[in-house]
Length: 166
View 1: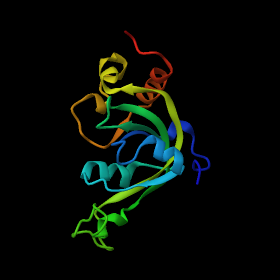
View 2 (view 1 turned 120 degrees about the vertical axis):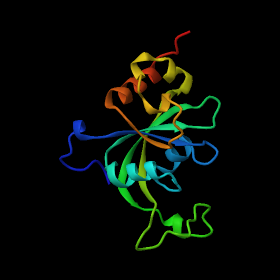
View 3 (view 1 turned 180 degrees about the horizontal axis):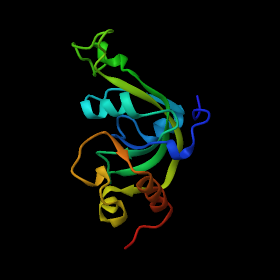
């Protein structure tokens, strides 16, 4: 599944998605090529995946709980939101006894690997860059799925191509 036919680049949304590299890293996504993004158990993040993420949307892949935490790669949404089957699997680690077939409660999307960045863009660098003012990741938000403005998305990619400022 590739970008939806007829969907112009300007109509795409952009996102930042966090993962601990010990759980699932950009290297894992590169190896797998594509994966489902399961286990999100925050209602706001769930709503983004269920209601707003579309095939072809750009994703900044962010390593949290890393040294340093930061943006490490780019992915794209390859399947829009659908029920997260792990919510109904007691052995999954993401089980929710209230989730049912009629009311799945939790949703996920599929991601496709696009590329690793030439360097990690650390959180501290993101916070220090005035051009990224208002970017959710630069606030105290712990949200694992968050919207990113197109200009911020492009700026982060440009930062990854340059050596960090001393």
